[in-house]
Length: 409
Image (cartoon, rainbow, N blue to C red; front, side, top):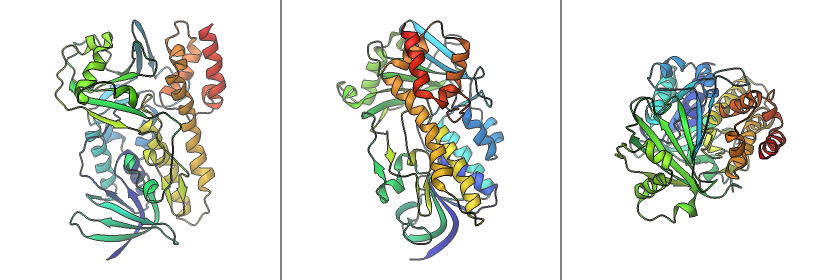
């Protein structure tokens, strides 16, 4: 079996892998990306957060994304029964981008990886990582190529951006159980048929089930008259419904009169899918010669669309650490990569937990929230979970608790 040499190997060509590749190439570092599928390919997670734009810009991919024609997004709307509230991300506490896009991921991911290629990253599609050895001075990856032949790549460093494939956590037995209940999502894309002026297509719509605090729907409009539609609940709840995924999804949509009315003219033309047990943790985000990016390391929940933002943040932190390490500097990966990444993830976690308990929903739907507090919450919903100048980031659990009590009173 032949052995190749590479400076940095990235497993996976999704958003984390492509942006990491772009950031490394802009520093003159050689990159080999190994991707098991061909692009474009379907993926879920279509509503970006404004914080993401800074990393796209940093990676030199902003113009390509802007010119791709994606749906403009300036905020998030929340609905339950006759209650409705929305947040304009331009009216946020933190400095930085206040707008972004809602994207069909097949196109978006393809745009990013093609830009990485233009910047000099070598990308090999339909190349599957079969084994990893991180016991030596440098990691060695065993790969099965498109022709079915296996080969090895020795690299100075390895980044796992394999998403829900979680290549290194599985091969190196790094996975640890999540403390979240086993939730599932059933989703599809539809031609939504929503009349102009009846729906703010510049915002994701998050709807709460009329009877269940912990069951919610997403409606993410695209620029071509279609939208992504999904429902999230504990898997045991979804299993109560009979039929295939499409039958279950349509039944659940019909239980929310507001959403059912919005989609009354929709064409349900794409088979629905289900993913379950997606929340994941790992024992460590880095090790000897490797680091985990995005969903390969940790995934919380889709409710606040934080997945791609966390992926980009991890890519940026890892690229900074790698650029220093490859020039001979000693890098503390725990202090410079894992801890800062976890800080933002843990902030999101506080709000995700409060959402499912119904506590954060009471804050969101409260009719008299002060503008200052709404601006701070808007920042977190926009992805700025690492801005410690925001009291709701620096002291998330206590601050949210105080506001919950005020809203309850």
